[in-house]
Length: 482
Image (tube, rainbow, N blue to C red; front, side):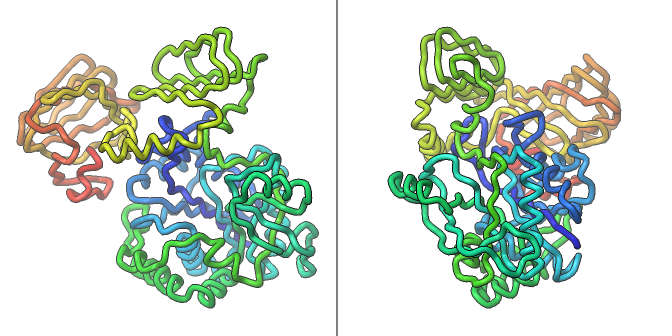
């Protein structure tokens, strides 16, 4: 048996702003421990029997982050499938199923899971997966129902039916009904009655069984996804789905496209501490002090109760507060009542409407070669801290509107400046005139760090003309940085 983990790594996680941003959302953040949610998801799936290297699905702007985080986790051979735009979970699952059938065979079992969920109990997770695999081998399309812990109004629910008679393992059920997000009174009634589970958004199925149902229920979507994969282009370690064909697929969830219509749906209960980390509420439940506070980073609490205070770049002190969420980053501070954290997304919407960068990116921006962080920005100058990983290099490029001055503060740099190529050690510098072709490389075995001072009439990241790039980036995506 071959089990292909499919990691859905799109999404923006706006309700966890200011830590989660569009260009670096929550699935890439170490919110629970030293690993990101994506890394924990991949490692959790790797432990299941028959699991092969995962197939991750994400957008263009996150491709290098996904590849790098999987590599850092020791997961070799992962495939990254790039969506031209988000079309919800059904087209993503369809492309994954077609890819799996071509590479591993039509009876390959896919485990489709969001990359930003938390599941602490690995043993319970593995046990539920084993039941689901048995049901999938019989041709069922399995959804995982999360054991509810409280009357949640932000999740859909699934009502269990009779036990499946065909599976070789007990614990799988027919699905009696899917229920939309209920009002509180109805959610309370579900818990009192029993047999209702939160819809966890995870699915396990055989590739041929899912595709047969998709072709019957959503033939146009299936045809568009099959064409998008057939016309896909290989780009280094990535597979780019054909944009025109993929956009022909209707944007829809697996639940609406397949699960609520098929006769092959099944449910396996999961009681493993699952959470979708959909707001600051979950993180406020992490290990607390005697007064119910959670403090992360450089935080001082005085006479406060039931507060989550997180600092990332400076000291944060709170005095005499109750039931607050306080989150500090290098460029933003959030203060919210604990019972209003779902409304954080409204702040993000306002920031986007105003065209503010705080909705999209952090001061530290990650690139395939490393990262840069803006230290100071004015109308005609900008100061950046740049880190280049060992063996990596930026594109060979030039700028029409700015000159740059580089000062190496750690490591060794190989610099291309016009027709000259030379090395710079710590405390050495060079000047890149406006219009000069240039490149920065790290030939050493340690990270290279430097301070870059830009000056000119325009300092936008789209003022880049690329001549050569080892990462396959082209001038039309220059706005995404060096």
